[in-house]
Image 1: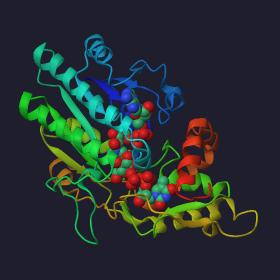
Image 2: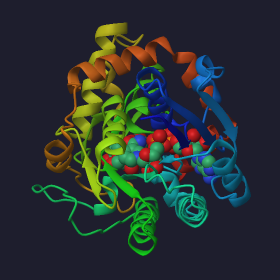
Image 3: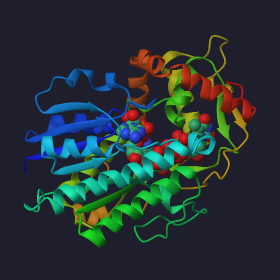
Image 4: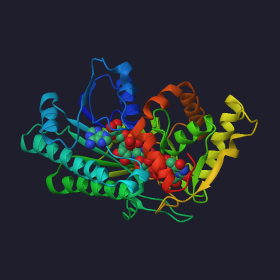
Length: 361
Ligand code: NAD
Ligand code: DAU
């Protein structure tokens, strides 16, 4: 089925991987990528497809109602895949304002323009329109040693980031119930893979470990995340778009729980194997440093992904071992990419956050 998809935040980590997947695998879909190009968005990520006949890039803000309305009308948007967000928990602690603006007000603007265009102006009369809101498992809060997040787990967000995402999920659901907007929601666990900004655990550790810098582990390093290869997440999003039931939420996860310390040790070992130990001859594990904990640090996330498996037939394809090897290889081949995205404001942010928390950067 042909579609014209408005992808928001397409120059970020997951958006970049999603657009690549669509252009490769869906020959009758057109993509309009709306991205404000914040510190986390990088136009270079998609430079090889910039002139693709089924792709258009628009630099702009999802909070700009006139711009979004114009895009819906000019491009006859029938599908929205909404990735754009402020996405880093640590930044939401030091500066929550942008999270409220983009994640809540921005999502509201997109939903309301979709309502106006598709339902009031009748552009959605074909019944083919879909608004897929991409969310996170963090809305469910923190688990103890056992249990899983299912779609019916009560929302209990504990950081400004997760509270802003929870709020946007509630708005999306409200637009389905109140106006009948064809909304779908996905709540995914931690992604890893190419193009992830080097503020997140895996690319941060790779970059620091390659440069002989400390590897800061928050608290005791025993927090658990459920890791999923980004391409698997993108395929799940496509599956939900094509086969999901409107008004429903789908949890997406990798059945792949790991303690942070275990991830960091694994990355150190892979790097030692691939590029040799540090110039001092010491293994990279010697760079691991336990530092002051993230305030309100959620202890454990683990997704029950039975619904999407049962109803839509999606399960992850990539094993963690293969995915991590491929990710390390990508970062080794693309050290220039990491350097280029770490601009002055990024370095300034880290200098300040690390100073506040006594971390040697
Ligand atoms: P990211 O931070 O890498 O990218 C966000 C993108 O949104 C950037 O390109 C940025 O320029 C753009 N953006 C930010 N504010 C904008 C605005 N006001 N208008 C237009 N564009 C704007 O994020 P990501 O890791 O790719 O995450 C994408 C989405 O997936 C987010 O909604 C996030 O909550 C969700 N998610 C992420 C993960 C993960 O592990 N990374 C897991 C589950 C869910
Ligand atoms: O669960 C999905 C979420 O995963 C997404 O919604 C978020 O957008 C995404 O950023 C991610 O959130 P996390 O907070 O889990 O990711 P992060 O990479 O920041 O941290 C992963 C774990 O590693 C977490 O327990 C904190 C810890 N950590 C992180 C960094 C950056 C460290 O110990 N040291 C670090 O330097």
